Amino acid sequence: MIGTILKITAFLVLAHYVAGFLLKVFSRKSKVYYLAPARQFGMVFWSAIGTWLGASILSLIPRAQTDTLLEKGLAAGIGTMLLLFSLPTLFVHFQYWRFEQESALELDAKSGVALLLRPGHRYYLDAAQVRAVQETKCSSNSFFWSPYKYLTLTLADGSQLTITSLLIDLEQLKALWPRVAYSVKTKFICFL
Image (cartoon, rainbow, N blue to C red; front, side):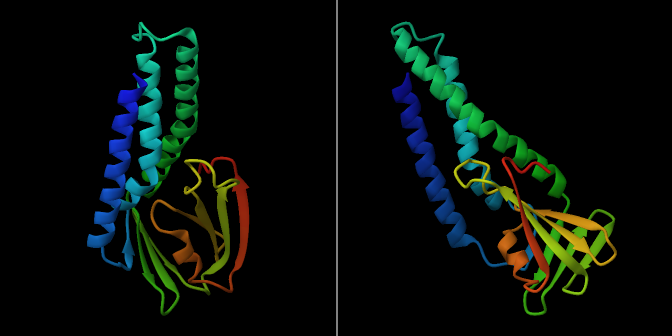
């Protein structure tokens, strides 16, 4: 039971690295960012594998006739832990995807300007327009959901904008405004 699942998992991990290599080779540097499949694939892959593996292990427990009670208990514990660590990431990913699905961001690093496009709105973001940047990130880098974080930009008129790590690597965006007030807030899981 577990041997078959481990073989399939090893194949999927190998496929992940091959796909990641091919995506890096054939991708090009862009100034316009949107919800690219390659970025989503890289962020959600391990959580999807963990969910699949946990659900597979738990579904095989009732069918295993030759396993001892100890083996079934270990399988149930491992399957449950995998689900507990991977399901929150899938929920965060879906929430970020729904939030950013119609967003686009154009960066001009030379002039320190970003143009954020959302349905019905255009936000021209430069050092004069952005008053403060607050980064919300996971309190630990050990979890599947650690790459999910977001920036809350406070604009000159007092309004706030949120940009998630699913849209762009936030370090690129923070580098545009090095002199703007910056703060960090930590959460266990970075739900919006």
